[in-house]
Length: 608
Image 1 (cartoon, rainbow, N blue to C red):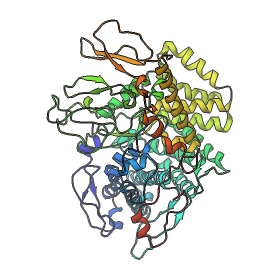
Image 2: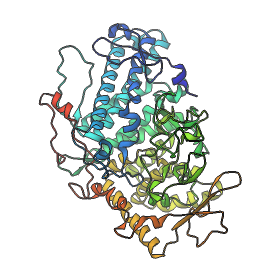
Image 3: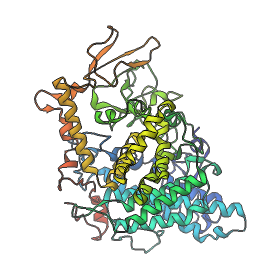
């Protein structure tokens, strides 16, 4: 259920000259302004302190997050793609890694990230100075400690994103006051990450578990903060792009793998839970507004019924509009999946058909095959599964929550960190097995789980490669792959493999030497269910004329250019950018931020 959206009527505290958000609804993500009292009064009581912290959440409901950071900014990778070269529009510049400082999308993300950080700093200072962290009332004391943890965790998230997209950025850790110099210089990204990690380590033990909070996984909780410590530690211990367009990694990186191991292990020890057996149900819960605690999702962004873009710009494509026969509206998919990813799955892996959508919903509310292999959808979500149709002409604002971290991520981060520190130990192998067991039927575990893990555990390198693969299969469509490829230092390598893989599939289909489906055959069965005859193999002809034939791998070939243009161009700047073999994923600081800094900030390095 939409706990926060329907019940959490947050009075966002508007502090004179500091909080400048207009009141537009009674929703958690769009909070009302109820006060102009000063900071000391606001954080003197639990209710208003809660409202002050809720102000930080409101930035998830801006385009900076709901249609940028959550999905649009995160391609191209080896498991996602979009054509950036076909337009000069802002999002296309991002996809093509050639964004200008005037890019509006960059400005939106920069602006709202620092607004969220500002409001986090206000809350942190207000709570810390309130005296309520030492209040004699245990309930007040515990609530204030948890609110402090929420504020620190949300601040850490926004700094993590700023670093991934802009590199070194100003590090603001205090609430704004009159006369303060706001034009701070850049701080090295590793100093920021180290500082945020230590702050989370200091507050996590005083936070509440999701099942102890009012809104469970729809608000930041101790599980998520523990997971964020690990995620930030792996970012800090990983590779990063230097201004000279080379990859760097600090000599102390193992210290951060140790932190990642320690805090994933802490969560596993203190709050372990079985992974839900039904992989598809995890995401169906998002679409049907179910938010179980002590389950898979640790924290998800709580969108109200009039906000959020999941099922509009990501998910199964739905053709709606006023002439459609259904009332589910229109949904697109801005980030498709390359067919190499689809065929990378074991054919028995349950996750493939949940993750990779080979169908779309037409105006007659019937499923039909996608328009070619370049349009495989992020199949985990779809507006056509909403319990209440939002209306034929609707598009945005589906109300579907966005998962920020899952427990499987914690298990795989633990396995990765343990392997980096000690090799593929029994503990690392067991964590990997737990994730793979859900991916296969129990009768297949001997081969697909036990035998597989034994084979890839020969040494640290092969186990790491298996983690790289497993994270692709487990989190496809959840748009975190970009950040993983960056910290592993294999971004360019993996996208180059993807392009070569696509060329190979195209060549073999065109030459008639493929065993994979050059054509696919599909139909709606007597119950109206979408069925594919040959999802894994080539067939010469269907058994009867009830099947629809569509070109599949043959669609990768072009008679004039040999390969479809998207194969050779979508990833081109990721392979042969300013420094071939290194992805220039860092973008320029927005023009307005540079101009307003009065000479403190400038775009230098990274080939700008």
